[in-house]
Image (cartoon, rainbow over all chains, first blue to last red):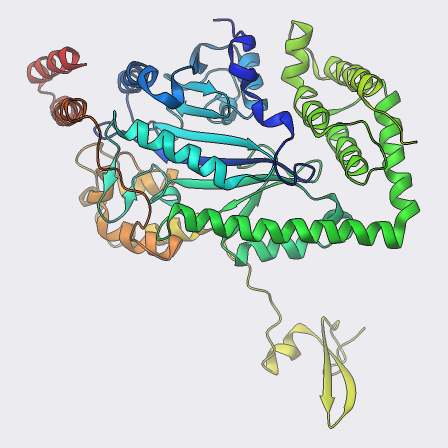
Length: 362
Length: 161
């Protein structure tokens, strides 16, 4: 099956738009709910036939749900490795669902994803269903309300695995109860440059929160991008868990803004030089490895946030982040690029976007 | 900088003392600081799942392997220990005692305080509830190699689906 991304509403990338509160610092807000259907073994234990029946059951009921009636349906297990990588780079499917954690050659049988606007459902991941809602900028309450609607609609047509005391039952007991992971993708170069980040991250753990890299569990922190999320899921309501995240992230945003002020005040020309050099490299480089690009793009995002470089919208910065990833470059080229070819294509892509969309102040 | 006390090891703890308005600094190595009752190591919280699995291991060690096996999906506590994943919803019943203890350690509670769904379209839910029962029976029939019964159950399930 060839994956036609134009069939996905907004390419599944509505959150890139860069609207919402604090969109210069918080790229996106996400709510994920882990759910299982009663009567089936969890996906890692289920037989192939069971996984396919779960998929069939979902396909039968979802067109009747208001939240999913226009959803595009993608059989991830029938996609090529490149297509699966592409879906993963768009944050539409996890590494596990894309089969990338086992060398990328095959996805698990029955792996699928439903996508519409800011809402999606992964099927046959670690749990039967992973409901997710993405919002641009800092909008956890909005994402939570949308996830609640979707959850209630699904619960009206499929019976969930449920325990009177423990709540929603999940394959991993760290998700039991609400099955909720509320997270923000946040850009913290100020705290990294002022070396305050260690304290902030340690503080998160004391507040019952945790952090990961751009692509979630097991991914490295690149380009000063952190995913901050709740750690526990049981014993507190979804609203409580989300409110706690919102309160702490608000404080982290303030700390980041303070750090940026300190940088400008105490090391203005050093920072300015660093950011202009990043901009210069991105404008002129002919060979741009992925990791270097992530770090330079972080500089560009900071320069834009500090009004050094204008004319770059948050949307352009977000687009550069996702579309400069390897599978996106291969997709644009119409064939699988080697790492070396991708580095050349990445440099070309970034140069072109900057030439068209960046404007210098004054 | 060497330790002010033993004069041998490197000082890693730097204390500022104020005694009767006189400010003085004391530099101590980890051992000498510990001897004076000063905590030197920051307790880094371990990954909760790590704690969790360790606790499962302790629980499992007290139980004979086969006794701790889920009757529905066949997952044993040993499997769970190895993968960190339960096999099905019934595992929560099969390992309830261990899990209650472990959930408390990981989350600080065992009682769900969040959303509850009252159920939807009665016809749909009734059909789904019947399917759940049939699928459970099918799982048991297959596990018990009762293939004729399994085939009949499978036909019923297909009819309802």
